[in-house]
Image (tube, rainbow, N blue to C red; front, side, top):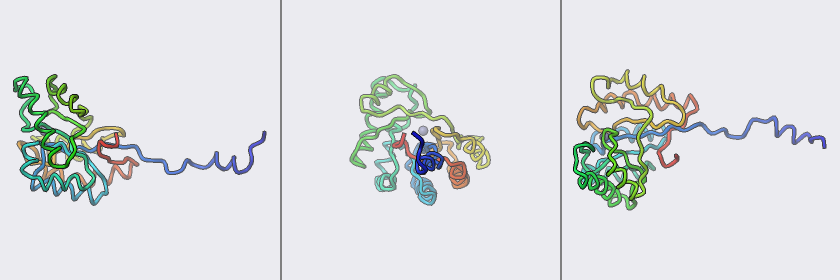
Length: 209
Ligand SMILES: [Zn+2]
């Protein structure tokens, strides 16, 4: 049977609403009273959502800020209770770090976290087991802003972020804790987000993964 005119035109028309490919934004080590609101503001201006891997101990001290993150449609992930190095803990303490980090988030927003990221990305079997027990997916990253230490200048951060490709999880920090450089990150972040948009990439929280 010969195709009708309407079938021909439907086949040759471009597919409707091609959706951009996603990249997943994650911010670690907060909440931070100074820098988390600034990052939230930049994300809101760009109308994008991200995942914040918060430190439980800090989250409980800044409950309003954690609720503000959740109210903005962002995801909260578990970055342990106190960010102690996973390899420097007893087995019991390693499990407790994961449990208490998750409990802090659940207490603040009424639901447990779905994602777990160990401090420094260092894997520890006891921690992974505990996260699995709590239905939290172990989540590392593909692309780091390296927004800390001697390489953490706005220019360097921008260059590293601009190499982000579709499907990647991006790591940055919304916290001035330790050797992080959030002041440099927030200089580079708006242009990075605009650039993703120009490339047809859609920044998202891990909820969409
Ligand atoms: Zn961290």
